[in-house]
Length: 587
Picture 1 (cartoon, rainbow, N blue to C red):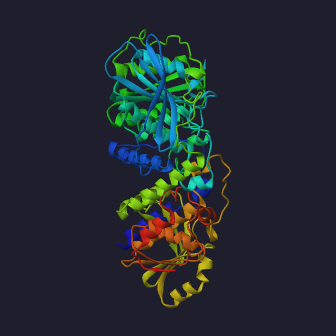
Picture 2 (picture 1 turned 45 degrees about the vertical axis):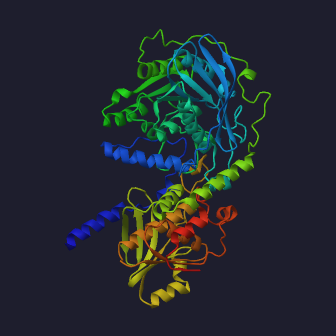
């Protein structure tokens, strides 16, 4: 038995990294990612569920906002021989409006399949009409083929003007209020709108868009299984994840990337349209085979296809016709290429397409400040209204991207200890002073050695208690260079404070395996706030001793003392106090 334990300990020690990967492995939007290997369907399904939660949390949609009435306004109908166009305003949040155009077949009867049609970063948004990309050509030809199509704005484009396109600072990040989140919510509400139309078959909803519209497409299809068919164009890539803030919310791609998000469409029919002249140039050899392997787990490899176009970044006629053929086969049951070929169009004048041409937004429409206030009020209301504390704790952890580790690796050399989560690459140094229960975990903003010099630790040592002192991320001996200069850093990497919170949870998990009594969690100075939120996130009972009286829970407090994106969306200080209520506290 002693030999087995010794071998096990050695194996575990070999897995504690020599350097903390959170300082050395810093992915960014231009990192070359590779798809993990998923060998079984249950393994992938578990990962898919995790990714869906991660996307929704990063978007500020966990839990989902209440679906208010859309109050659709349809007007300005233009009727041609075989299609019609209407202007549309949808109230996707109370007082917040999404603009678009609804294209319908003319001269046909019955219920039609519908296509959600987001656009990318074209100069004219949903009105763009040029050789590399034409939203009107796409929508008109789909309508002629028998689809109801809704082309809708990115935030800050055309009629959707209550926020800029690129917005957000530290305060917005605390509340997970972002262009990405608004756009994903708008897309979800677009599906609601399409399914509500009497001439739409609600079981045949598709989505397609290129570039930034491709990002909107694959995020929508990843979280909303009402989308039964999809064609993200020129966007799913292992070498570039998106260059705009509207594609890069904090925490979105922690340990994840777009190819995994696209694979979440499986086993529903998916077309990947790629191009030789942009970041999708490797798709036939790299991204498509990786996604096809996920479809093979479902026994549906025929449901995913790739068409590779010799062109620069685009949604040109060749790309559009590839989508017509794919949708025609899977949705219409039509394979005659002549019937699915693109026909020329006559684009309408902008004034005939824009919902706000010579009009203002409806009465009660919010300005930016009012919309942000609405978002904050919603978050507070949802947190306060969640009565089940375990559900509240789960949402709390998911919104700030921390976890209770399944297991903790450890390496002990006398008093010195190293902790790590398996497969995560983190490295937490500390001092373990063996003694009697109950065990205590002490966190000081200057690290373990500074904690040991404090009176509270001296008293614990004198009493013969077991004490763990840790150098949480970037404190004490864990301080190290960390390059935070990459664009969209927080989409791929967590803040120092978020990592500190995780390290405390990891240390609590380690101690919890060595004691049957509640752990005393002691936070000193700034560490008091870290420990308060760790106690809230931990699923075990802890005895919290910390003075956080300097911290009032305002946005300014979080930005100055404990910057963790999503923490106000998770409920902030009020929710943390609710979650630790009933546990012994000392302030």
